[in-house]
Image 1 (cartoon, rainbow, N blue to C red):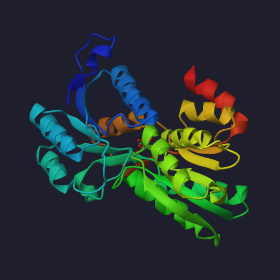
Image 2 (cartoon, rainbow, N blue to C red; image 1 turned 90 degrees about the horizontal axis):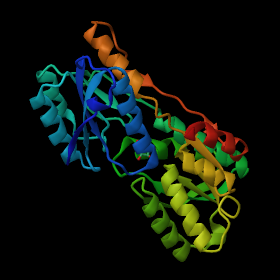
Image 3 (cartoon, rainbow, N blue to C red; image 1 turned 90 degrees about the vertical axis):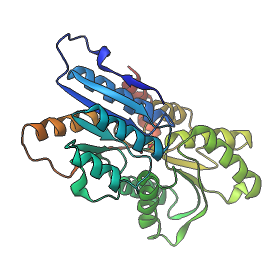
Image 4 (cartoon, rainbow, N blue to C red; image 1 turned 30 degrees about the horizontal axis):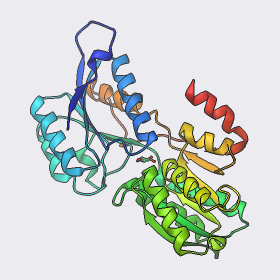
Length: 305
Ligand code: AHR
């Protein structure tokens, strides 16, 4: 796993004020790479030296990365955890080294005294929004295929729980098949192809996908089966990446819940506040809207300028 420093992107020639290690999940989705870019840009803007390690979806790599950051004596650590459990011991090591850790994007189950704060969305709320939209679009009658994100990640777990909370208010809405696709486009396609081969497609009313990339994969599978995604089978997903707006412009998907990528500034603000001796709340929440085909062209243009 290659270490890259993003300090060189900074046009300012003054020495870096802070050195921050960032352990990122990987590159599984367009959302993830856009999120990494926001961190690089914001670090450069603030003259922060960022040591970046891509964990390639492995918690083991993330633990090794944090060990490396501690050895390197960084000022702070950003951790976007692949999965939720198993962080206590490494977070304790960082704490013993007096290095504040900010949990970013996904959540951990560790004791909250072990990290400074977490900057993240409310994944349950995202699941609730998706289910609420689907309930109104189908008058509460729908057999649903669920494409789940990475097993053990808080994003997958909480989106599923939030979706169920609302779905269970409607006795004629049910999840008939649920399979994990690791937030990857190609797996979304493969899984959906398998489902369309084994289930009666006319009984599938909608796909609820834990991210846009898997939804786009599912669109391809549905088209390959000579069905019309967005019409024969409704599609709702999460992230609001540019490609999902293109899909909406083609009439291929129906709704997306935005996962805001703008967490970098909030995370760096929290670290700076900590070093200034100021209080930092334990959860800094980012929010995002629900988007539909009607504004897809506008959103696509806005996000790709
Ligand atoms: O943790 C957030 C999720 O991770 C995003 O929704 C998904 O695209 C990414 O891989």
